[in-house]
Image (cartoon, rainbow, N blue to C red; front, side):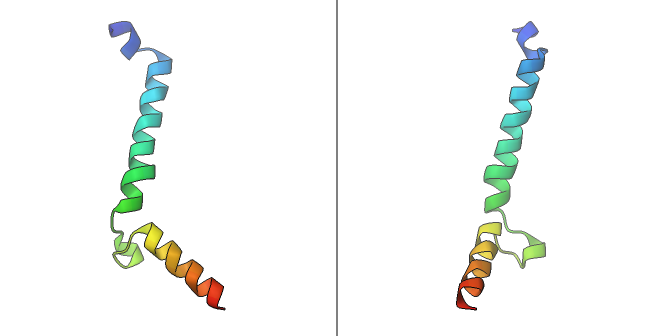
Length: 54
């Protein structure tokens, strides 16, 4: 087990898993104050709705 934890491959897998957790799941669901306390998906939907109306 100890060798696996320190291997380059394991570190890359861990970085990828952490990135996916934060960027793909957490940041898409949390409210962002810079977006008016909306999720990025809500802002994107509003933008697309406005774009389709124009």
